[in-house]
Length: 158
Image (cartoon, rainbow, N blue to C red; front, side):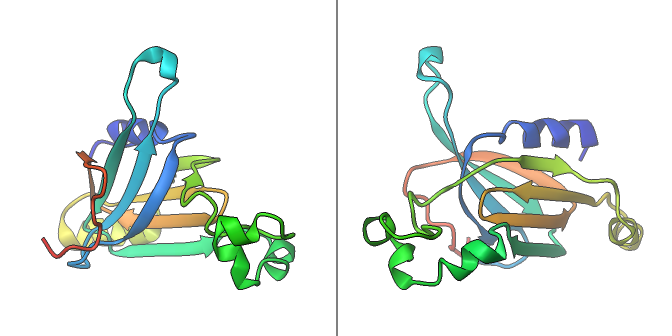
């Protein structure tokens, strides 16, 4: 995949809502689902987009929530907005999405990407996706972006 095209697709996720991420049911590709919404004045309807990071040989997920906030956020009532809204801590469930801020970026090519590219004979890329709750780092070869219907169930084996 061309790095310029990849960078543009990643830029389009800035300030949108990440609603799900994880390996697909067949465990080769990593998907990230976004709720994309434009200013209502544009007339562009909101949509759910599936970013499918194909041939994903590495996926790392780490917290972006500072340790001090974690310490105050262990109460299970913080899993749901209704029970945790008045508590002092991070409301994990909240509105069931994470803002794409600072966002997604194509990273400089790592040694691992070079090794995989050489071994499989195809380009590999490193991407970082950052939200208010998680930092994802993916090592993959290709990206497919498709619209998915409301209610799409991510863990099918198709």
